[in-house]
Image (cartoon, rainbow, N blue to C red; front, side, top):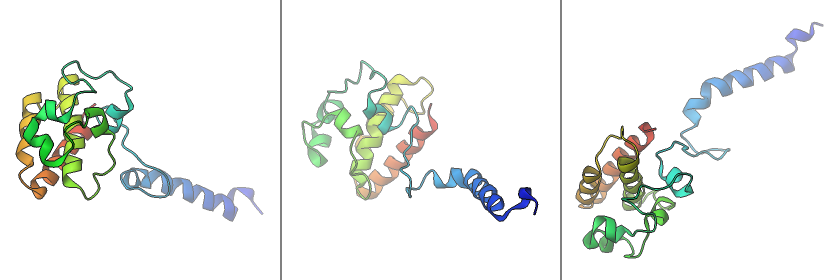
Length: 152
């Protein structure tokens, strides 16, 4: 019997081809293996402190100082820091949590990345405007997430 066509070798080759072609579609869904966006503009990246934060946005600054008392006190603790906000894991099913996490990453990117989609004042304005309702917060969080994901 020819060893080049053995069933185990065909199964192995098929498995590798499936992994190769299905890799992109599976990377965005959680599954058996832990998946996480690892771009240089994501909230996870900023919370890891691999890069120093822009001077205009100190990581120990609070949400209240960055976005105002009314925004901070409406949904979050007044002493919640920006680095704590980027490390949050409550955005699944929580539109306001996702808005805060993605909004802070967008604000950091607007200061640190020249090619980022939004200016700092735009990020702050959009975040404050999205606080009007949960659907608005969810939509804006998705827009920030798309901009953060496209940035590098």
